[in-house]
Length: 127
Image (cartoon, rainbow, N blue to C red; front, top):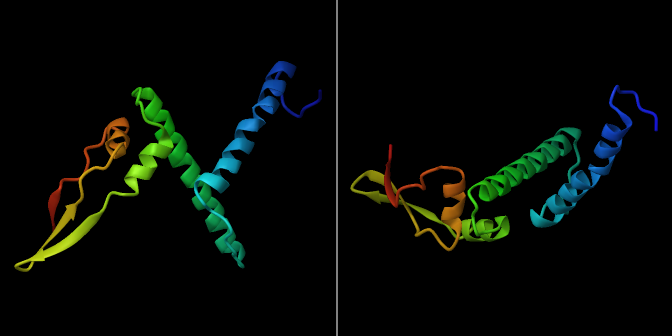
């Protein structure tokens, strides 16, 4: 095996064997995030789309890792499906604006817990 690096043969072989993880990630990115078909015509938009796909993959990987770190009984897909059900409504009361959110459905709280974030208040004033 020849390379243009100073890595040992075993390190190069190990890196090459780990390419399946990248291929799997892109396969999941295309299916799990429902990202296709998208028809883009300019190079700038294609680059922007690729960047957004990459960022989505980074966020997904980070959340999966955090869920594992806190030994969450939930998987990423369960948490995301429940987060999709979370809603917020803007309320105007006597000229003051408030944001009211729904109850935390199913496993949605697990995302906040894993990321060590406090969920938004049920009702909060918008300034």
